[in-house]
Length: 239
Image 1 (cartoon, rainbow, N blue to C red):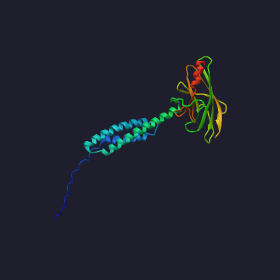
Image 2: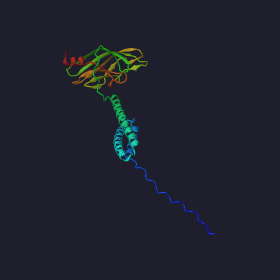
Image 3: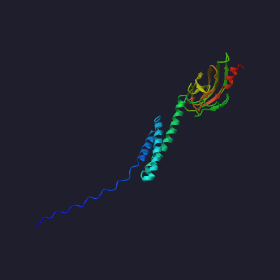
Image 4: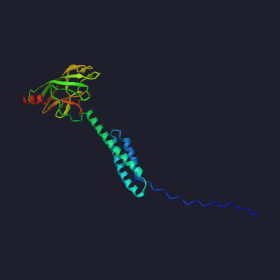
């Protein structure tokens, strides 16, 4: 009896068609958008986040154009463009905020204009202090250098003691913050008030524009400047 061999297996099916090509621009846009968002909260490095977001935005737009022809990568490209735009906006806003903060901390900012006259009462921006400059006098012996003294009453509106010094009180000379000297008791208890004397001198053309007050840092945009320019100009003119 002849032995029969099992039938041969059917031939392998032909390989399937390859999938659509990957949209490389879309992948790059997505990655750069993510990098930009990650760098957003990191000071200074967020400037690289702006760059990454800008490049990602350009690649994302290019990926969308390519997706119209190939039909692939549209969703990824849109997500990449969205993340890139958000990274650029947030990084720029955060960079601006950090720049403003550094300017206040390092006295880079330009002083605000004088907005209060001698004798007027005002409160500092945070509501920490109520202040009234009661008197300002300036003298000059040579018509060039001017020495000014001023007196003010400060009331502490907080529940904690406040000590005034050359951080909370500054002079404004020629559109720049400068130190001023305070005499007497400068520590004010909660709910208490103190009469304090201060002095400042200018050498050369000046001019002395005023005295800046703030409960935390007078060399900032939110400081209140009391106008002393009239007393300074009177001393310079010899009247």
